[in-house]
Length: 610
Image (tube, rainbow, N blue to C red):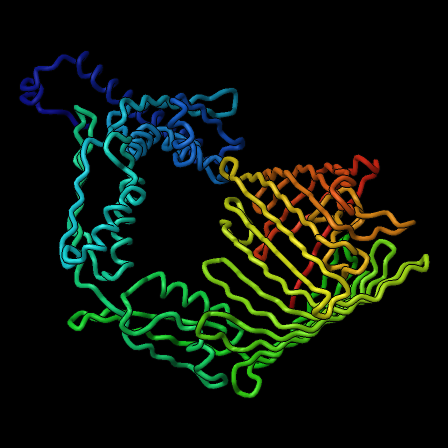
């Protein structure tokens, strides 16, 4: 045993009791530290365990910002995660107030406050978030300055000033939002750079926010650069086809003012041609004078032969097979030979056609010969036709003129037989303005047709035929759709029995009045339904998104076909269905009840191409 020297003990001058108390306190600290460390270890382990139940979020915020925060706050977006731990939940809760405040600044709320807490509700966690957005900042002034060569272009200056009414989304007195601020700047710059000034740039932009007055003073400055014109057009990549297949469709001329839309439209048009698998249109502006934009078109050619086979089924026609063969370079001129056949349980048809290159006026011309054997509603019809078609498509608008000679032989089981001939000329106009094109949620489609035939020019009788069809789509909420469809037609003639079937009207079935057999609404002739001179149908439908790419539909249809309007007696069909938003368009199935016939009918369509 070792002792301290007497001198050392004397120097410490500490009573034995105090020494013992200090030794006890040190031992306590050591033991308590171990306990705390073990508790912290257990707490850390518990925090790292994944949540066994989804957590709940309760947010208290004004309605005008509630939906916005629900879309973008992490506490809402993370609810579906399967790997969340309690530590993650605490972190989400702590960050939520600051995230909400920063998000609200993009809506013009620069004095927002928020608070959050996390509660354990008997094994299920809940995050509570309270948000007070404060007063929204309003735009107090707008200063748009455009300099450069554009100042010498009076017409362009006038167009910019006129267009600012719809280009600029933040006029004085409106609420400031970051998205409108960014979009307004982009719109003005794009408007200038896409019209003669492709090198235009924004040299200054500033949104001065006064948090005390809740105002925003907006400033932008754009330098236009010099005006440009299109230069020469260079083509490359041609081996199988003549360059004329592209040059015949050129709408851009060297020396014309630069327009970005002209390049975009040309790219889209060339990509839709069957000659190419891919098309690249590049137009880099020169940096020095002369200020021109040369156009470089590079193509990747497709094979000259193409064979398609489509298989499908629909309640209108039954099983269906449709082979198609095309050759894209007749006589090395880029003319297209096209042959197609469509064989189903009720309908067999085929067509041969020759498509010529587009003319300088923008019109396409096509020669065709077709045959159709159709059995529908007690009538058997065999129709052959030859004709020429002239068409033009621009800005999603199609205009078509057709002159054809039609021969039809039709009969029913009760001894009635007709041999008909006609040489009608038809004008058709179609306008598509839907977004997106394949599965519309907004916009409209319109179609109008007019046909005329004269007895003195190869027809059995004189007749005029008018037909129109339209549909309008409205978005409902973020994902749902409402639509209305209307169609109607009338054939003016004294002898409807001498008019070919395709120039009269029947209704019923999918795409018309659901709840009734396909083409079953018309003139009753024993057990047959023959087409009439007048027709009108309409549809109202609501589609509700259930899960991704799938919608539930509710609809009502109404319509009829008859010999005259006084005989027209609308039939009603109601029902429900599902829609699959496939990459090629909406496909689906419907169950409809025909109120007048008191019958349920099922409509289904499915097809694939390979």
